[in-house]
Every structure is written in C-alpha cells, then in structure tokens.
Length: 578
Image 1 (tube, helix red, strand yellow):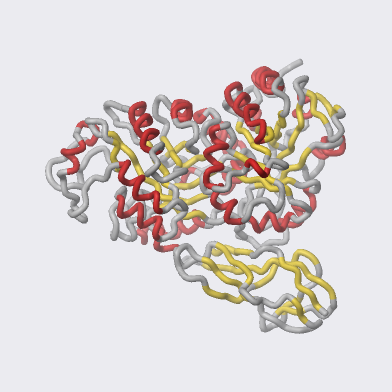
Image 2: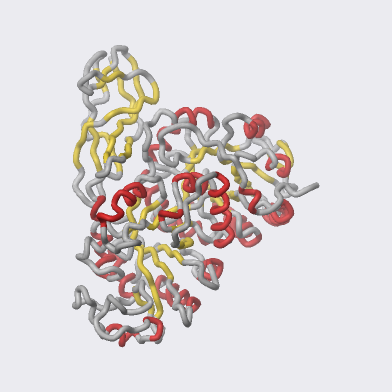
C-alpha cells in the first residue's frame, strides 16, 4: 500500500469548498460521519469543510451503531476537499494512529477525544505533535470550569487548541472569553445554525452542510459575527498619553476595555525580567546608551525616560500584579531573549515563577519569535500557557490556495503543534489565509503595521489598519486603539423592541450598539430574513402583508472613515404578523 501523501506538506493540498456569501471568514462547517451516506458526501459538490471520523485501534472508521464505514486509509483518501477530525476514544488508538500518520505523511488533520478522557489527547500530542487536537465537551458539561477564562489553560495543558460544545452551553460572552485566549470554539447547531452564527463560533457541527452554506449566502458583503478583538500593542499608548511597555499603559488597556494588552519581556544582566521592547536604551532614555542585556536592573532603573521622565523601567512581576485587577484584559507576553546571551531558558523559568504567584494576573498568554530552543521548549516548561508564534517581515500575503497552504505548513512545522496562535505582521497574511487557518484550528491575531514605517503616524497607514480591523482575523493588535472606540463591536435588539405587529403595520427596528468602553446607544437597523417574508417601503420601514411568522436577524451597517464598511447582526428573532 502506498502512502496517502507524497510528503507532510502534500497532505495540506486540499481544495476545501468555499461557499458563496458575504460573511467575512464564516465558521467552518463540520459534519460527523455516522453512516455511509456521510462518507459519500465527501465526494459531493458541496462537501463539509471538516468531518469527524470515529476511529478504533484497528484504524477503522465506525458509524453510529459501531458498524464499519471503511478503513481510515480509504476514508482519508476521499478527504480531498475536507480537513479530517480523527476521533479517538480507546487508549490503543493514539499509538496506532501515530504509526499511520508517519507512514502516510499525514499532517493536515485534527485529533478529537472526549475531554473526560483528555489523557488520550495528551498521548496523541506526545506521539504526533504536528497534528492539532480538539476536546469534545458534549455530555461532559460538568467538566467546564465556572471561570471560563481558566478553560484555555486546561485545554492547552492537554494538547488541545480547539473545543466542541453542545448548543446552549456557552453564552456569547463565554465564547468571547475563551476565544480571546487563542482557543477555537465549535458548536453543534441544534437545528439552529443562525444562532451559532450569532454566537460568533469558529465552526458549526451540523447534519446538513448544504443548509448552512445556503444560510451564509443570505448575508451582505462584509458581515462580521466574530467579535473584532482589539489588543493594545505594547500597552495602550493613547496617542502618547501613556508610555509603551509601562504599567500605566498596560493598566490603561484594562481600564479602557481592551481585549488584551501585549508587552515585551527581557532579562537584565542580573536576571531581572523587565518590560521593554528595544535592545538598547537609545532614543527612549536620557544619557549614555546602554545595552539592556548587559545592564543591571538598578542601572536601568536609575535612567530617566525622554518622554514622561517621571517613569522608569517597570519590572515584569510588578506589571502582572497590577493587571490582576483587570482579568478580562489578559496580558500577552512576548518573550524577547537577548541577542548576545540569549538567556531564553532563564527568562522562561522566571516567567513561570512569576505567573504562578497568587498576586499575578491569572490566565495570561504568551507569544515568541522563531528563537532557539523554540516553542516545544516553552510548552514543556509552561504547559498551561496558551501561546503562539510571533513573526514580522515584509513578505507578500498568499495569493492562491497553494501559497496559503505553504504558509500554513511552514507555521505548523515551526510550531510543532504547540502554538495555538499565529501573530504575524498584517502585510504577510490576508482573509484567504485566515479561511484556511480557521479550518485547522489555528488562531490568527494580526499585528497591524500602522507604526511599522513611521511610528505613531496614523495619517500614513490608517486605511490599511481599518482593513485589518474588518478582515475577520481572530484578533488585531495595534498602537492606535483610541481610533476605534466609536465603532460598535456588537449589536442587540433594543430593550422593549416589539415583536408582534398587525399585517401591513410599518415599523423601524432599533438595536442597541455596544462599544469598547463607551456608553451604548440606539440605532435604526436593517434586517436579514432567514425564514418567511418581510418587505421594506421607500421610507425604510418594514412590514408584512401576510399574517404569520418571520425569522430575522436585525443588521447594522457601519462605514469606516475611508469608505469601507462592515455589517453586524443580532441573534435570530421571530416576528409575528397577525
């Protein structure tokens, strides 16, 4: 028997079906193989984008009644347009799967197991580290921690970066809290895929992919369902009001409601982790230039900043203490080893000690560039810390499926399955890459280039930053967060909104817009019709001449300062016309 793929890279060559529709990076559509008909659907014109394959130690794919649907080899040979999710429930399956993956050059897949048997995920991760994992919480809701922010750490410790839930278990806020910590959320549709869309999940588990694809086609171009998470780059600088990489700037990010605050951590010559980006003090501090890694903390602490001279160099442990007050703005720690001495091992050890302290912020995140000894080393020493690969540069974004696959393969190869996220400069990626990353459970949070060429010059790169904001990435990290506080991140039906009308009665729906840190306000909304009939007159008022019900999602179109726009939607609502 010949290997399924010529190489591990070749296993990424999947012409994944992309449906028509206006949703920016729509949720991945996943089915569960329960019958031969589900296997046949892999060869249809509109196959699922992910499929769960229940697999036994003999590497057979089994159905709902335990019957054999085919060998794993034969079923995977049909997954030319679908990313497989290999479900394991027996302790013997991971070892068998490891040999199978190695012989067949299988890298582009996910492994799934019940969270109650997460030792199977741990086993699979140790044997096949380049394949991502998914934890199944269906029927195991009692294992979900009450503090939803704690769940990502438990998942990452077991090797999982994606989770599957039954409908109605997680609120929209729960999903947001988990997703902002680099974890992808799949939800069963429960017969209501529109509700899953409104919740902002990364994927939908459904028995009818075609119906979901048809649903996607109903939405106008630029519709966003996942929350646009705004992360403060080097803390919130607020147009120079606060210093980068300072306690005042990072706590300001918490106070203003940012979804995360990115910082840079370096090690001084005497082994003190400090918060600083640059390798020297040039341009940031008065006096003689010093190399950070060759200076003691006391030497650096005695220097005055060129801007805000009352502030100095902040210690990492002091910053994590200060951020304990802002648990909903996790700190994203970028590990910055020295150029000459490196010191990454000591920096990782001290970072772990600080994060383990009761007085430090719980559930932060971590990113790191491609620096020895690499991600596997960090994951082994900080196993509960969700983290990802950080990368800058000026390479062109993928222009084709093949180029997107090349980038995905390179990221997976470098991260060896450890990374839950990819943090590149936004000129390196695009929505095409985001689509293909989403099918593999890879979180993408773009680092905006608004300050790349001319620091803090909003006028130079503002439009480009706006396009990043509405691109559909899982998160967005930049220096000019204050420019976006006036744009709503979600909308809900206005309190007291009528849902019953007389036949022919005209009405204008109103929604409550929610912002980062500004008061909510009301706005007139449009509507996306899911079921039934709804008309709109020349004055923009809605009505139905026929008695009966109509299921809709109210919508709001926002236009950014250079003309591009995006659409937000409410949860599905049923209107009654009598």
